[in-house]
Length: 341
Ligand code: KG4
Ligand code: ZN
Image 1 (cartoon, rainbow, N blue to C red):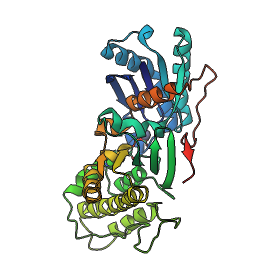
Image 2 (image 1 turned 45 degrees about the vertical axis):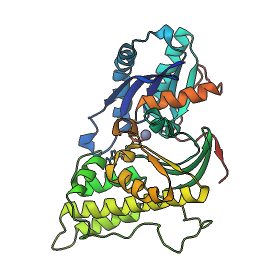
Image 3 (image 1 turned 90 degrees about the vertical axis):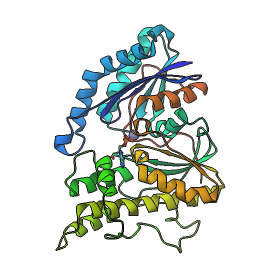
Image 4 (image 1 turned 180 degrees about the vertical axis):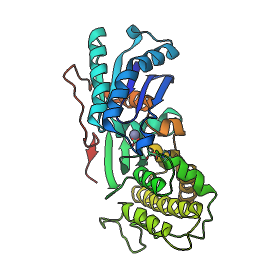
């Protein structure tokens, strides 16, 4: 099976050819730089930029893979969740292209794509596992019994992990998107100068408590703002380090709790924040004594890309889940395959 993946849910226009036997044949990602001056993604600009980029990005992905339209078995496209105008560009283009050459379209949930990303590089990153998805818009802690069977254990009550990084970057005067800039600054910070309370993390929390697996990052962002206002001021590197350590410890502890509660020996990370080296290292250090291996995609596959959409599309195609030209985009949608926790 040869699938063309298309991803336009936010500010990356991406296309990729993935096969079920040799994995990624090509991957093209065009990041929109125009948003940096606004300090965040401007939906209208994103949609227009996708419109300009979609055809050349797909043509390049097909050429890089050495694949012609008639070699494809399906087109997999992110149909939800995301910016609706941005999603619509990918969905409209994909449905029209597929109809013109007589191919099925496979709608993919963006977060299920993130769940599959690590498996493109690590053959052992397959269920059953504990998953932590940390992107700009979502923070999901899942128990994955099998592909397509997802138990949602916890999520954020306010800001997503990536959103917290981006907001703190803004407070620190760093460019958008800020995650990797905060990470770089934090490496030069002293870990013992600024310490923030670990949000939603207390020793007396017990399995069954509704905050046992959930996270929350908006209070941490406020704590950062207050720490930057003290006189004499803290070094920004120390504040960045304090913030990143607090966020990482919370994510790591909640993930360790989930792996232990369900007896999993594999932990799979996904989403842009999974490209953070300190998070992956801290996760490995904490999980190794529990006998669990941590799989994380490389930064290129951690952030938004069409290879993960094609890979999730291959799975959905194997279940016969195809759509026709009536397919539309939706801004919010629950992960498919959720089962009660
Ligand atoms: O998964 P993604 O590309 O897009 C969404 O689906 O939202 O994630 C983007 C997010 C941004 O908030 C960005 O700041 C964050 O991932 N990010 C990072 C790092 N690289 C990207 N956060 C922390 N450390 C990084 N190295
Ligand atoms: Zn994403």
